[in-house]
Length: 183
Image (tube, rainbow, N blue to C red; front, side):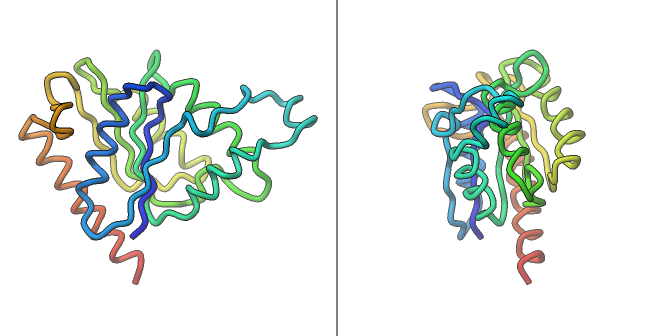
């Protein structure tokens, strides 16, 4: 199984990048590639820019990586209750590539974390509702509230036993789903 994993954040110290890297490490016998949104920084989407210059090559490169996956792990950063600007801009550009839906029906395991009690629940709810309109095939979700209390950044793992068990159970479920999809 090939997994593309990334955080919906361009922060150099992204807590969502830490979470998605940990989740990716839980998949056994998988080829994992972790992408960095900073490698796909493009001008802010504008219709006139698209008409004049076309879709940036970086958007096409990201879509190619995305499409190479059997599973996408995405941990979304929540900015004011929705996606980060960096993620939304990438989403906008990829959605403009002719002949494709943004997410191309690739199975997606969506996650979010935040320092507060909802753990990015708002952005996760938005994504679960919105992504299917753009070819999103969301097969599982996970939130981690109180990141600073529930994640050991030194050991790069969830320190809250209950939340760690929940994530591992969901990884196992998705792993079994992937086995069924590949047959």
